[in-house]
Image 1 (cartoon, rainbow, N blue to C red):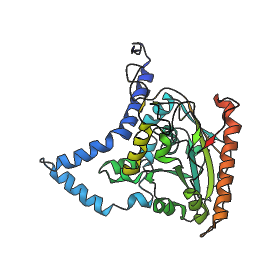
Image 2 (cartoon, one colour; image 1 turned 30 degrees about the vertical axis):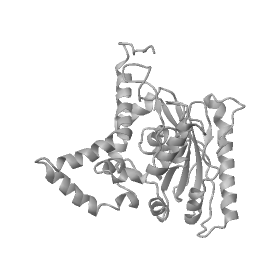
Image 3 (cartoon, one colour; image 1 turned 90 degrees about the vertical axis):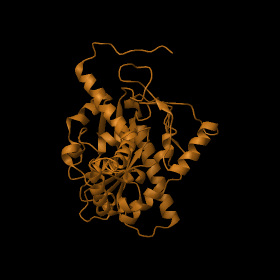
Image 4 (tube, helix red, strand yellow; image 1 turned 60 degrees about the horizontal axis):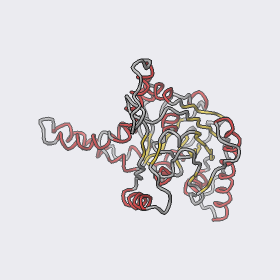
Length: 335
């Protein structure tokens, strides 16, 4: 394989953009194991008291992720995230107002490999969420396992990440006065295995838990489609029915996280590595679907709202696909 190296005269601001994305990739892939190792390593050094004091703090602070977390606006507004935004670049596209007197469940599609669009748009201030939707605070759901990593849990809570379980989402959606937007990557970890460039598979046909959640709290539903989310990484071919896909799905069932074999470019060369490609991501936020509170929806009511949501997502895709280079004969495939 011929390695294509980056030219020496790359502008400095582009180097900074790459560095910003590098730290983000490391945060997702390597920071949690590093924090776990550090926690136990310190116990066997003269700094053992740090881990002991943190363990005591952790005990008293254990429920904080499920109670809205601990978002830190200063960290969400760092220049670092603007550099990451400009690397791809990433854009947040508004199609309708969202009344801050209500709470919302925002369904994000597709998951992609590392949900770059969801993180940048809803965990940072880089793309202008606060200006586009004044009065709303966004919270992105993440697998609960990551909140069991010492130190790392505090870092991700600063960005407004909360566990992807019903109790955590319900806590925000039941707050009176509205103003909370819970963002759910509906396809979750399994959908990451379908994140191949040029594909538009959406794992949604049997996903009704978030619909029921919205109905139980009277939270309005908002479909989101992130054009380009699947384009920033290549992935080893793993079609359904292959041995690789079988192993990935089995491991996902055991560990709760998927393991897509993805690759893109490196820091100083463009041929291989885990740094995503510089390809635009345009996250289009659709119109809200009004939902009346229904603590015990029937199966028919749940199915009807689920179908309406899929129709709205499909319409959102069809309405905007031409703006982002998607062929006219390409449509969403609900799996």
